[in-house]
Length: 202
Image (cartoon, rainbow, N blue to C red; front, side, top):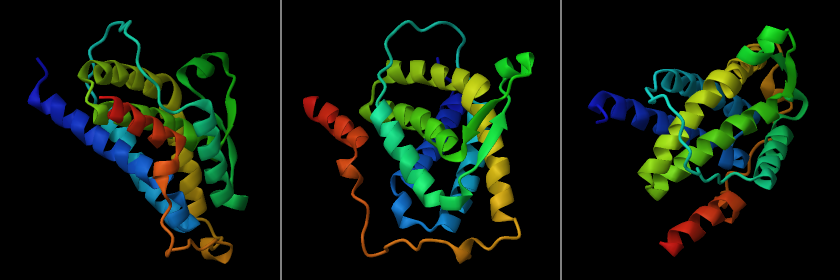
């Protein structure tokens, strides 16, 4: 039986995961400086909350539905890259696997942020649908991906964002101010359309 403490840890993780998804989905409402500062804070919490998740070991052979498809991921990546502008960065990441071969992977900031979004959105959507068995399997997948894949990327992203925020260059110099009078309609996003369609079938 799941302990109340672990249930609390899962709920806290899902809360910050949802906050990150909302940030990325409403990226046009933020200036570049606001986006980077909010991303820095939320990703720091995601790393902590994921690291303390207690997920039972074992193989889950059940199918875990994925909501962020390739076209969704590419759209999000392009949105982030456009917002970052000249601050789009490429950096090397060592994962537990690549570290053994001394072969780092080269990745862009927008790509890494989109990868993290993909895992967060999938598990948040499953939780919102209310499929407890799928959520348990997704948590296991998320924990494994965190340890071997996007966890190291997240730490590298934080380092890059830290240097941009606290660097000598003023982010206000080339920042594109958001249109505060126009709220982005995320209901039209392919991901959220799929989620709404699923709910209507219930």
